[in-house]
Image (cartoon, rainbow, N blue to C red; front, side):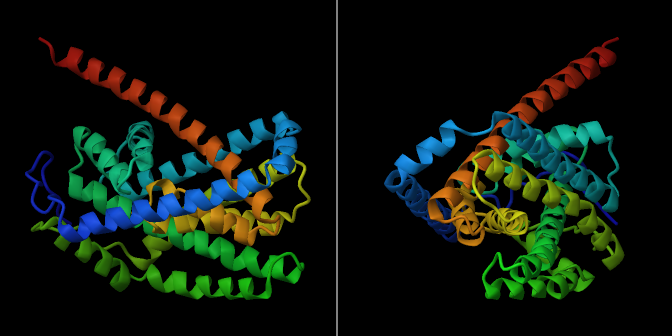
Length: 324
């Protein structure tokens, strides 16, 4: 395995192309349309929704906030493990700080700023950008596959309970498809495409099938927390619910948001997907998804503040130790 020295020149290929600009524009348009649909749904049924919000159970919302934070913590830990897979072991606290510090960038237009932010922060810690980008690509791939696995199990369960439309049973195909996507040949293709996009002359060794499977399984608890948080939010608003359908819808919505890279933080798309699958109806579904998103915004904001505080303190300590 070979990696580049930190600070190596990596500006080649970073100039936006016409195609990249069109992709970003398309992502923003999708976000605007999706958010507009969500706002329209809420406005047209505001009389009903406003009463539900006023009577929400704050205790359940606080518990949902904690569960949402645990979901983010698991995803950050998965990136730490992924860095170990590619031969860059670092302390958990350092990697968590890089992750949450960079994660705040996902709310910016463009879809890649979380990855860029994570790369820049980890660069200061001695990890070159390509390794950071490659490990992020691997961890995101594992997250998407594990989200598919979750839906592949819980979706058919919801169908069996009569809480989801029959076509959701097709989600079971995510189990074998996900296993194929973790194969070294598929993973290697993804790394090569990234390698070509960055115009580099070195590439990481492709992880084994077993290593990628372990990484994927490590991310599964995050989906349990994502689904659990959605169930708690639904209960806090007093809606009749199917935990299987709600949790499956929440995970499917998150997975779509991750795949839709050009759309900032999956804006609007997650709400639409959740409302379509949760079985609560359009307006309650959008409200549950919106409240859930607000909880994750709070988690991301608080985690970013803690991360940057830790990194500043660590930087000052290092500067002090270097002084004669």
